[in-house]
Amino acid sequence: MKDAINREQIEALLRSSAYHRFLDVQVDELSEESITISLPGNALFVTGDAEYIHGGIIATLIDIAGYFAVHRKVNLPTPTVDLQINYLRPAAPGILRAKASVVKLGRSVSLADILVTDHAGKEVAVGRGLFSSKQ
Amino acid sequence: MKDAINREQIEALLRSSAYHRFLDVQVDELSEESITISLPGNALFVTGDAEYIHGGIIATLIDIAGYFAVHRKVNLPTPTVDLQINYLRPAAPGILRAKASVVKLGRSVSLADILVTDHAGKEVAVGRGLFSSKQ
Amino acid sequence: MKDAINREQIEALLRSSAYHRFLDVQVDELSEESITISLPGNALFVTGDAEYIHGGIIATLIDIAGYFAVHRKVNLPTPTVDLQINYLRPAAPGILRAKASVVKLGRSVSLADILVTDHAGKEVAVGRGLFSSKQ
Amino acid sequence: MKDAINREQIEALLRSSAYHRFLDVQVDELSEESITISLPGNALFVTGDAEYIHGGIIATLIDIAGYFAVHRKVNLPTPTVDLQINYLRPAAPGILRAKASVVKLGRSVSLADILVTDHAGKEVAVGRGLFSSKQ
Image (cartoon, each protein chain N blue to C red):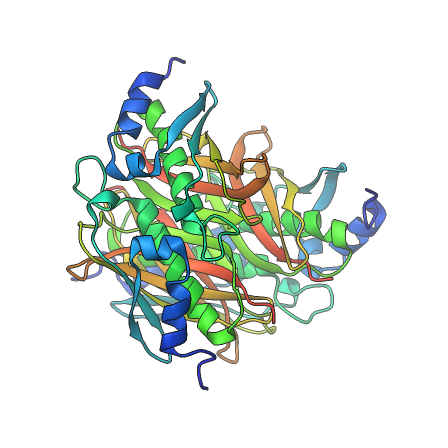
């Protein structure tokens, strides 16, 4: 199967959102099976004591990566229906990467799994998201 | 039961995080049963077409409100274990409010429910979060 | 709003499933806002030491109650898309009741909240389910 | 790492519950990384029209498999804290298998992923469960 949209189109869409540009999220890797979105370290995103990255930033990255895993397959807006996030350990400040793949592509909703790793490659969270995929 | 910490202490903690100050989250209402955290509208938080607020911002607000609903009762760090977020409708740009209450206060983990409304009072998302509450 | 289907129709549907008849689930209460399904105590449903009811039985009751909360509003099959279950405390053997209400009725999927109480009225679990509601 | 308990001990525990014996769940496969629990087809477990297996049965199998994935590692009761279940497609009547592995073994709670397949090997549901693992 050919992807519905290519890397350049994904990057353009990713950067079309003001919040995405602020976060500075990028397409890190792209394969038939998965998409990895990276989010650079930013002193704004840490907790008060600067020891780790805020969980809301991780949730946001999970949402974005899952969205694009589904979106690239259907090439239509795929608004998030629900998100399940399990935090595994505190995320050390620095770049985060979220690798997302589609578990089930459905005619009405689609499911994606997302794994977030920190700059050292440690798994910091797993996410599972349901996205609207009505065509 | 008296709350473990009072409003001034909650506000100081809330503002002790760089990310919280950036988001400009505030304690909006506080009762024995619930805490409401508000997040002002910000042009940065909208999607590309500026029609609604990014789901990651809503997830972040759910995380923060649930955290403080539990934290104020135990007065110890209560890191998020997991989050479940269901989006109900697109959130119109403007202030968001998240009202959080504790469903179950446990010796090991505690559960909180969170409801997010937009500036017009429309329900835009519900969240349920599990937070560590080891004492 | 008039319900799409009435109590007799709900009861007939509920009993049309072999598994439901085996469980002996019943419509306990019905209002415009919610439906309560009861499940009688059964020595088969307890754990080895007979101290509490198996979590799978509670998950099943959550699924059934959420299904009918949505189904009665749309009067079409509403297969479960996903379930989130949080166990609050062990369920003492005896009758269980699950009260379910619709959080959001959507054109594609609908969300229901479910609260399970044991024979003494203690809250033993909360559930949140997404059900297909395409019309 | 040697498992905390061996296959014979797992099987004895699995069969020590009245509900497990009724379901006739069995240890199907066991490796260092995962445990697979099978549940034989049973005419009681289908929906009214006998076309597919009840979602509550699938939720129950997910709970059991996740429980034992964690339990075998810690050798202490590991009650279910929460379950997330996503149904992928209707489950054809017949044997079901749930393969469970531990995502994170924690001092307070542990996370397991579970995949359920039907008799033909088709994926019918995915689950993620959090289990208490206080030692």
